[in-house]
Length: 245
Image (cartoon, rainbow, N blue to C red; front, side, top):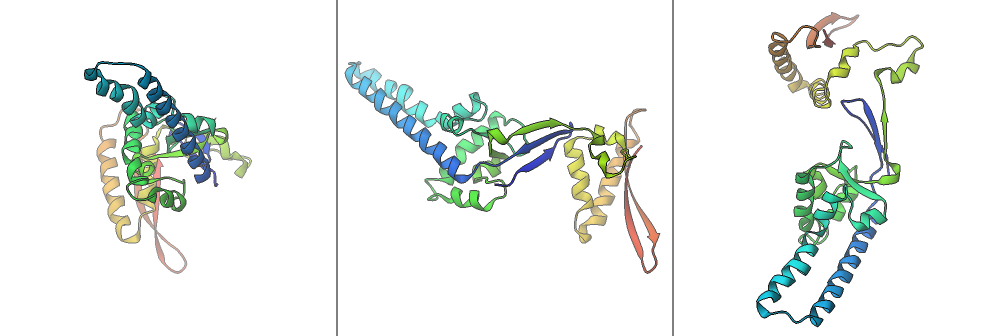
């Protein structure tokens, strides 16, 4: 399974390897075995206890049905992305950018599990095989992935990390460290957009930046996106300039 590397806006390099479909299936089987043992033990105990008929259904719902129904959601939420099966298999649910999922992400994964499995006859398994980070539909919707915990690495890096390119290398715009990951993603998508939309997107982004830069405080970095024309030996080329002032 290929390892994915992410550098966050806080310049933390996160290396994580998606868990294989086999590891995830084994973890799921372990969870089902544990749940089956729990239900069997509870019902065996329940059969020995004589409760008033009014409390029978309430007892069954509270002690048997609800814990089994919410098992995956509660375990992942309170155990840092791990059910008991995932813990035994050393795999964990994280956000695709390496951060810790929130309650909403765990809830969305749990709600979409029936669509990944029983409702569609295991369509989620096919999605896991076809996606780069082995994500089922619940993962894609929640922005999460399941990783191998032992292969997870979180290393702080700096702008000078790649100084081996040249001996006297220095970052051209060290102020870029103040940009958030979201801002960098917006700039990257704009510069890499198709020819038809590139001019429009650059103009739109430049306009927004100009509006922000007119009100920026002294000393704070301001992003400037410009377009210049240069003459080469055989044609005129448009050059996109991206600077911080």
